[in-house]
Structures are given as C-alpha cells and as structure tokens.
Amino acid sequence: MLLQLDPASGLPLYVQIAAAVRRAVADGDVVAGDRLPAARDLALTLDVNMHTVLRAYKDLRDEGVIELRRGRGAIVREGSLSAASVRHLVAALVDEATQRGLSADEVIEMVREEYS
Image: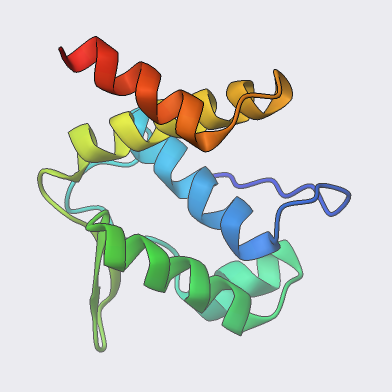
C-alpha cells in the first residue's frame, strides 16, 4: 500500500493518512483481513511522527474501517468495504460542495431530498 501525503495541503497529516487508507480500501487495494503497516514503520516511511499515524489509525478504528489488535496491529475489518466506499464518496461530495461555496446545511438538505 503506497500512501502519499501533501505537506502543503491544509489538511492535517493524520486526516490525509486516514483518507489514503479509506481510498485504498474503497479501491480494493487493501481488502478485509489485510494487515496495515505497523504505525512505527509507516511513520518512518512517511517521515511523520508515529503519533500522527496512530491518530489516523484510531479514527479509522472508530469508523469501523479497521480493527486494532494488540500485538497484531491494524487489520482491515470485514464489511468495511461498503462503508469506506460511501465515506470516500461523501468526502468527495464535501470537497466539491466546499469549492462551490455550499454550506453543510445546504448539502444535507440536498441529500435528504434524494432520500425522499
């Protein structure tokens, strides 16, 4: 799994790491049961603080994308693929809406209308 960060981006590095993992899961580059790199190894590879990677992994765990197991590391959860795919689409929607100057309330209303 190849992750690239953009230090010039306005997004915090941990958010970029989590987004890259979500994208890898959504694209099928990483599948359920796959083990992600150890936080220390990924931090060295990306030249970031290990706590930055751990924060990204914690967010992914809280979203249900990965499972953190002591001694075994971060493992992609079964069933996380569809949720990660939708999250990826939502992130793209939010980016697009922000660029077009739409508020969160306007976007939420549009989504509600689609469900009706």
